[in-house]
Length: 223
Image 1 (cartoon, rainbow, N blue to C red):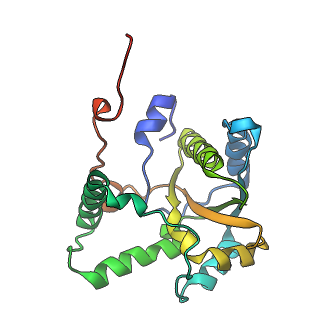
Image 2: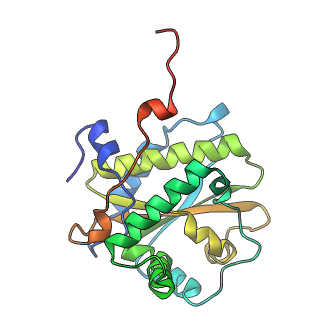
């Protein structure tokens, strides 16, 4: 259902891991991305760059990464915060909810690997946006790219569409950049964004999400 308010878009957005085969039109994606140009960025650097794939182009990339090992060294690390006990606990809670929704037990290594492998096909989403930017960009610009992506995900909800940001695809960054004709020397690959219509019959799209209470994360002074 399309979102009529920002609040509805925020609260109904979730990382969808099962999509219908309903096509997403180029017109719709262009409309969303054209609006998202107005996302904030420090010094108006607008560091983000992307390529959107569908159809044969998407299938061609998926064929390229289907059976190849992940790259070494990694493009970047996303798991460093797991040294913090509270972050590690939330990570474990997410894993329990996610794999529990598809009846994969904690010690079922093959089952977990099989599900994780579905990242390679972006959970059958009909469109995939691949996000990269110049290596000269630092942490403030990475934050800008995050704000741009959040803007896109909320605008997709306005169109009745769903998404899944995929840092997983950075494990194949050099292959992806080569496929897109993007220089590995000059650019870092950040993530994919799977785009489509959620399969609401899939349990994986309904597991309970958890967020910390507001007062655990934000203080208010001077009010």
